[in-house]
Image (cartoon, rainbow, N blue to C red; front, top):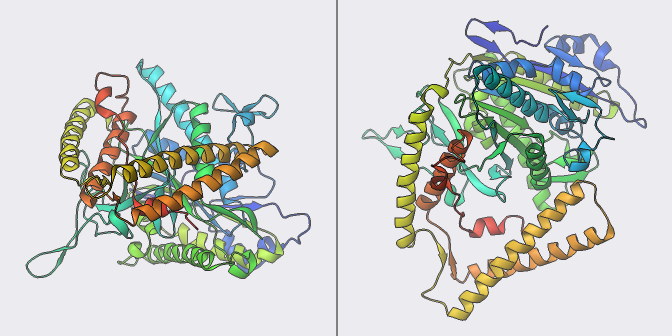
Length: 549
């Protein structure tokens, strides 16, 4: 079948592909994957099957990537691309590429042997960087035809879902909330100050669902869930793409175990948008690996046990949603996990969705591969609604004006809340000046050492593992942990207070507005001074993240 999905008038079936990973030389292959009659019935459900010898470029060309770009740019359709499979089956490799693929040396002339969309790139690059280059190529062509002179760029955010919480990978792993919009029910912020909505009931006691994320420019039929407060960056060339991916690779939660040297312990969700062209979103999702604990050997402490259990639980929730949709059930349990809430629009919603199932012919992983293939078969039975074309460029000036006005109101509100103490921060009334100075000094040192540690981490990811770098990593790591412990103990005395939920909600909405405006090329114009970034206050929960002292 061609790269287009099966269409039913205004409905589109999810496109499913299967990619087989090469079997290690010291492992036995299990040819029953291809030869077994029952398995052939399973394989017939896939739009494409890619064998272990096919390249990253062939994977991109033979799946529905090009079709999704057309749907996204030309038809203003939301698109989602996600990979699913056993730990170590090649999900991250398929979506991004092998480890250390996104450093400056990867574009050295000795390593570059492929031209993709007129850009020289390594052949090892996966679907995500190729999607970005494809989008940039199409935008540049469209602008030449329209003789429009403007800065070309794609707005990108990257978050990870870890232990059923959502964290911003681009912004120091700040915890962000997932909220309902349109007619959707209340979601979870999953604890802490990010519980963003309150349960409201009418006179008869019936639950009134919130509509906290309704965009005045969007019709209410775009019902679902969305992220609030994820910081965005602009991708307009290869170097910005490299910077973006280095941060994602260095920040994302991963661990080494028996099945995989860089096992993803979180679900990674990257969202691309072009606000100056349309309101559509393009999501790329690298799911954490489904796994059998005894084989992966991840259980070494209680935290890792909870981590593995949570990964399997969220993937089970995804499986229940897929099963319900494939059967045509009225009720689909999207609210069972943050992952399924975020993917609601992609599964049975108004979206063009593609799935790649990754597997292996390794005999040791045969049952896991068959299980993944069965998941792919269920996905192939899910049909999405075709989204009506919604172009955003015609009313860009009006939308910019509306967003700038809202930004101004939020800034006034934040200023007022700061004056009344709702922004949190240093407690200046109950503690001596010397204690306040000591705390702020430790806070400054903590941020400096943390920044230095993250920079070293990126160098190591780029393959720089000299003795001096490793020594510097050890030093910066010890300084970060020491200062983190000091600050946490100080916070328990009350010298630092967390911001109020209302203040954080306004800050997160402000981040959303600024991201949208920058994607609409407001930067560099007379409005630029109105969209400066503001600091997100440090909170106890965020400082506690990753602390093991």
